[in-house]
Image (cartoon, rainbow, N blue to C red; front, side):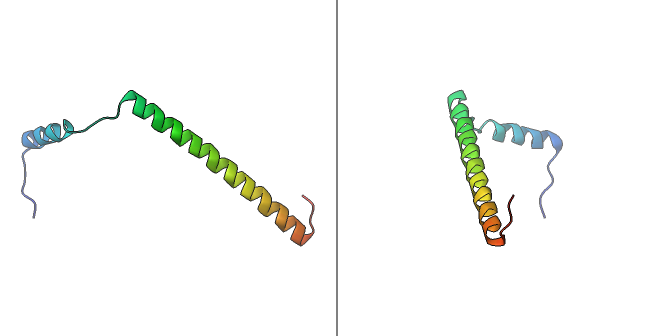
Length: 66
């Protein structure tokens, strides 16, 4: 079973651990954001093209005009 810690000691430990965090720079954050947006656009275009192709193939196979 875990040992109990009083609230003051707990918050002191939390503050100590939080000071060890290495935050990304503004440049790293901007680059990561741009990379995510580019990948979202690429994925959206891929799934749009796949959806159109599957729709066209099903229409061709079932002889249904959309």
